[in-house]
Structure formats: C-alpha cells, structure tokens
Amino acid sequence: MNPGYRCGLVAVIGRPNVGKSTLINSLMGRKVSIVTAKPQTTRHRILAVHTAETQQIIFVDTPGLHRKSGKAMNRLMNRTAANALADADLVLFVSDATRWTEEDDDVLERLASVRSPVIALLNKVDKVHPKEKLLETLGSLSSRFKFAEVVPISAIKHDNLALLMDMIPNYLPESPPLFPEDMYTDRNEQFHVAEIIREKLTLQLHQEMPYGLTVQVERLVREERGIAISAIIWVERDSQKGIAIGKNGGVLKKVGRAARLDIAKLLGQPVHLELFVKVKSNWADNEKDLINLGYEAP
Image (cartoon, rainbow, N blue to C red):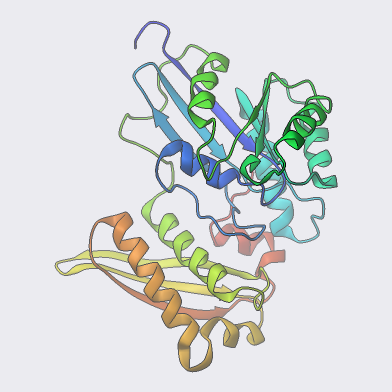
C-alpha cells in the first residue's frame, strides 16, 4: 500500500428522484445504476468502486428514503438506506436545487444521528433560473444542517464533479483498498441484466404500470453464438400481466429489443433474450418473496 493511501465508504443519500444514481454513474464514468425519471427506480444497495493511484472511493448507491413505508418493499428500502448511513465514512446528501420537500426534511432528521461528516450536494443547478436564485438556495441549504461542505452540482452536465472527486479523499481514512483494482461494482452480471430489463420496462410503461413489477434472471449461459438469457418479469396481479405484455406482445417486444442492446454492450457479446411475464400475488408486500427475488434483508 502507498503511504497515505485512503479508502472508505461514501453513502449517497437523499429522497427519491433527486439524481443519486445519475450522480454515481457520472462520477464513475460508466453506468452502474439504472436511471429513470420515476421514484423507486433504485431499490437495492449498489456499490460503485472507483480506484485511483492514491485512493479507492466506494460509493454506496441507496434507495431514496421514503416518508410512506406501507409496503414491505418500501420498509426494506428504507432499512437498506439507513444501514448504508451507519457504515459510511462520509455521507453525500443530495437534494434538488429546484424544490425542497418534506421528504428532504425527513432525510436531514435521519442525518442528525450520523457521526460521519456530511457533504451537501445541491443537484440540478443547471435548471435554476435566474442564477441569482442559486445563492439564496445555497444559503437556505447551509442553514438547515451542519454540513462539512455545500457544493452546487449538475450530475447530468458534470458541473463541479471534478471538484467533488478531489474533495472526497480528504474525508476518508488511511487504509489499503478493499476491492481489486479492476472491480467497479459488487453486483454480478445477472443483477445488472435484471436491472436493465426493469429500466426498459419502467421507461416503456410510463404511467400505466404501478411499481408492482420486478425482474428475475433465471438463466444466463455463454454459448458459441453469444449469450442466452431468460428472465421472468414478476407482476402482482393478473390485470398487470396484460399491461406488461402489451397488445400482440408489443410492449414485451420493445422492452426486449431495447434491453438486448444494452445487455450486449454491458457483456460484450451478442445476446439472445427471452422474457416471460408471471404473476406473484402481492410480492412487494411479502418480505419472504422479496428476499427470494433478490432484495436484501438488512
């Protein structure tokens, strides 16, 4: 280990849909987490490992912290995010420069008991007009909590991200790297394939489908001609099955085509993808079903 080498866990926390996954993908320079414009897109804890000559930064992408946690899935996601906070050496609190909500206040309440330093990231500053409003918003954010730093950023346009990457190692402990140099995430291929399919479904279904779907990869086999994958799209009710398949299978065909392109890019080989839609009644409110479908039990 180089003298002075730093390594630590950096939890990225915020309410749903403030741009946490977009931020991590931008900092990593590659897609680690799926991104849509809808809340609840990130449902799992995902590690993104950024290794450099003098430091290894382990970003922890977390589900957005929800005010309402009625279903088992929401409770599981809230616990996953809370556990990430407890383990972190540094916390990045992400908020949206265009609006502050009661859910942001809820997240700050949780941060009150965190011992690690917290850097506030005011995201989507490219959408603030006129620019004079930004100073007022930054001042308001600074007054809400004792942050180590407050940094205005645009995750999508990469504004101030280089500054942030220079800042982070100062808050990490001296430690050898925890992961191999060539590793960029702790998740396996099946996980990323399932997430890509779920991303395409979410984008395709717009408002028609509630959040009662998940994806499970049953088979991923490398063959001479490419990679053969079969995956199940689980929905909660029979009525949702028709929505996920679409008229004459139209939705499933579009989702399969879009997912296949992204999966082939991820795995570096041609992909043959088979998708099946099945019903598992009320899976999102059954903790045993959730764990069987790959959701963590913190």
